[in-house]
Image 1 (cartoon, helix red, strand yellow):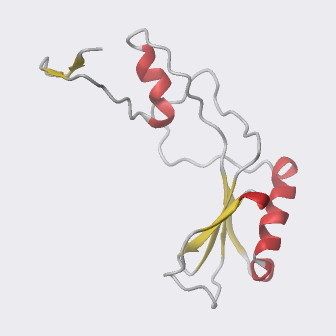
Image 2: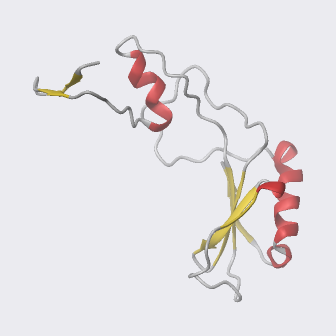
Length: 134
């Protein structure tokens, strides 16, 4: 790779080209015959209802043993779940128009991770759940 050709035909040359296409990086690379071993994976989030004890200035807390990170979100918390072996999503092709979409939860697969994450913040068991999504 020696550069990037823009839509208007101009070429921006460089020693390095960074493919910052996120989950579309593989498809972008394929346009030029380049193999990019990138695969989107499911990643689940739980957003709680309002929790009076939450301070919006709290830092992000990560607990690898519970496969969760926790941070303030609105008036509640976000519990972001990571499985030890994530499930690939759309292995053939990521829809080009997929943008901030939500995939319905796989409760059977995720319930154990969710329970362990909520054990990390017991108060999260006493408030409602705004959303649980991927």
